[in-house]
Length: 408
Ligand code: HGY
Ligand code: MN
Ligand code: MN
Image (cartoon, rainbow, N blue to C red; front, side):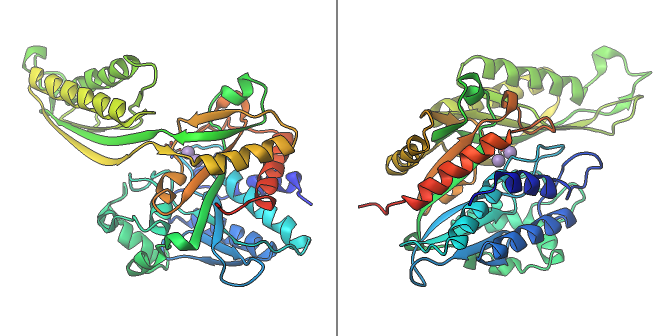
């Protein structure tokens, strides 16, 4: 029997593992990530699964099918969060999948396929800048070069993995073969306003928008705020400010494009010093890859032109790009039939947010089920869902699993 109250309680329990007093921040390979992953591994085992921490810090669990060694239906989501996050983004998908297996196990049910659940250790990319680390390792598309990426304290991902008790040299062995994974299904909050606006509890995802993550560094000349005349300044921050507004203007130029500068660092960062160096991030998304790459090219050109005009040096690095990822029709149909069997209206919609399915698409077909969230708010402590919607999501996911048919 599915227990939506337990789903909500477990989201609350995970939210207590946070580095942010009074809020939720849990980044990759942190002490809080260890505690949260241990909690999830315990719940996986309670549900009758073989569970373990893998070489990149994912919680991985398996529930055998009618006989051992069958290919699996993989489910899951991520356990890391953004800074000052909500407690459902990622966690709801992992906990609901565990709840479904718990119900199968309680009923002594074994299916013609195995079920695997993965709580991915890093999807948000907050600590090292590049995202989908856990799912890329499982999909065999992990870029070993990212092991050199450094966090804000200057610690490399390799060092952080070793400190966490993991062996970075064993990450490549995590790659799953296509024949081992029949499909990947992820339940996630919508993180947008559509379901709520239309009075719907759940939605079937059609595709996940692609993204480009850039980092720009502008270098001018630091100087005394009291003595350098305005016309002699090469102020890195006023140049960056013009670039930030250019990102907004270019993104506003097309209804399907979104552009965000989420992080900016100013050096030396003193009230009486003209900023000599500024670093900022740029996140660009769109449903079509061509539209996104065209927008990125315009942003790059604009940054270069501002730097030339203001006589500052500009460097732009592409941190990561991922193309738009389609969900597979045969899986969308099966998820939609589950929605119908549960007596709920059907709605298909795209995802503006990125998800682990983008990486898993490298080895298998993917589908996603969205659950309504209040005001469409996410990546915020105001993120919230109702227990009734958690129940609706769990019932549909359970129905999808019970009726899941391998492709003909
Ligand atoms: O940025 C995203 O879309 C996701 O939340 N990582
Ligand atoms: Mn997120
Ligand atoms: Mn997410």
